Length: 192
Image (cartoon, rainbow, N blue to C red; front, side, top):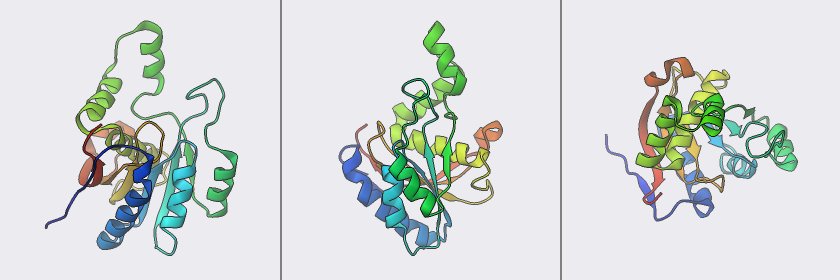
């Protein structure tokens, strides 16, 4: 089997439209039925609704947990939430699989625990977008929104500003994290 990887010069929102096009194309080639998209404000998820219109694909939007930046603040914009709900896109707002409570411990006491070290390794080796793809795949599997027995396409980005990475992933639940497989990289920034 031979497949190409599309490389962006830089990370960021300017890649969103092309990421969604490439993800749709690969999903259709492979018969993948589920796409998970990380979207803090919901803007990228709303763009994905449009990009996947007419395709037989179930979209799942994953956003930051309440209080991610400021206590009790929800970063998912209300207008975007309404669009996603109107299109019956499940919205998962949950603690991040690769930080969770451990981030609170490291902020208060310093240091880095094993889960944050795994996140840092993924981020450092492959970029924020790929780390996010892995993370949202685990989160969606844990919420029962995608099965762990079938491949999905996961889409993530860098710094909460659009998406720039898409991967074919076999998800795993958090307690079986090391069963997760990144099977293909569809697109990714060269520089992160």
